[in-house]
Image 1 (cartoon, rainbow, N blue to C red):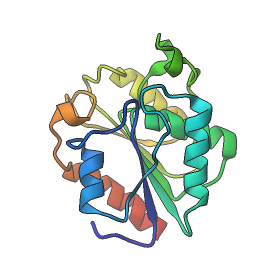
Image 2: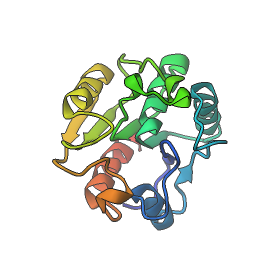
Image 3: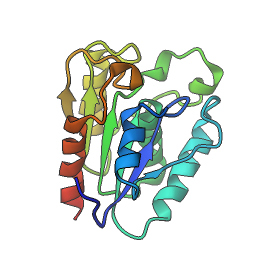
Image 4: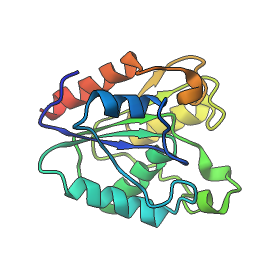
Length: 181
């Protein structure tokens, strides 16, 4: 995919995305992609993460496409519920079902907003994701008004999944970016 006029903002989840994560690989392949840097990847707080995303979206000069993973997806849902600002689209990969989380920081993200997102979105889910059942991922997609792409058994679609630079994901992103242009 070539870089376009749409700004691509990358939103890692809890503990960030390491160097082998597909998000990090995409950033190396496309230097124009911007990572939304959270102040604390290991002790996430919903208000801080949403505010950081909001500032990043407002700082972009044109259309924005979000690429979120795990808790980053839940951050997008909270941001959309609070701010309602349209973005051109969102690729929401392996949303983490944190409604039963015991970690105090993750509890600040409860409950997960389950209302329609005001922009086109695609939820990508794995059938054996330890952070969300496929049924729960389907519910996220349905409630968020998103198209669901089921990948089969790929774990949490992270570094451990050995996705490389994940060409199928890049195709899904290209679809959203093309609509933004």
